[in-house]
Length: 104
Figure 1 (cartoon, rainbow, N blue to C red):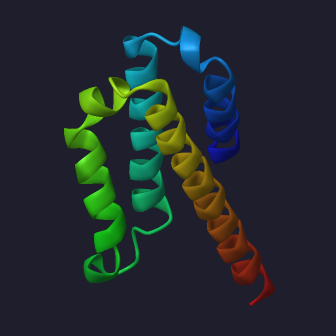
Figure 2 (figure 1 turned 90 degrees about the horizontal axis):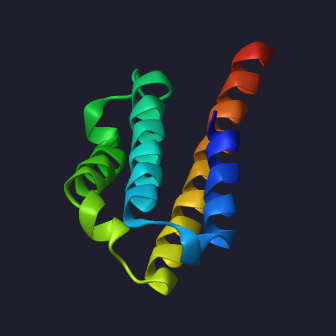
């Protein structure tokens, strides 16, 4: 699922000047949903004190969706780039965990 989202982020970056505020907000909500899913499914077994970083990110993004959607194109593009990197990293980590469980 993260791979699809990464593709959506990349497509949004190429169409950035044509995205409405609603389109931008919908993409941020989609990213937020993926972060929440990752938190529950992949990090659900991890003690809460070790997940403060993702919990803080989820809360921060949840509270600022409209502000993020209203950013200028260049700022919004930087935010999307960072989310793209984060999603790729989280996807890579979750796949690595699955492979290591299979090996054991």
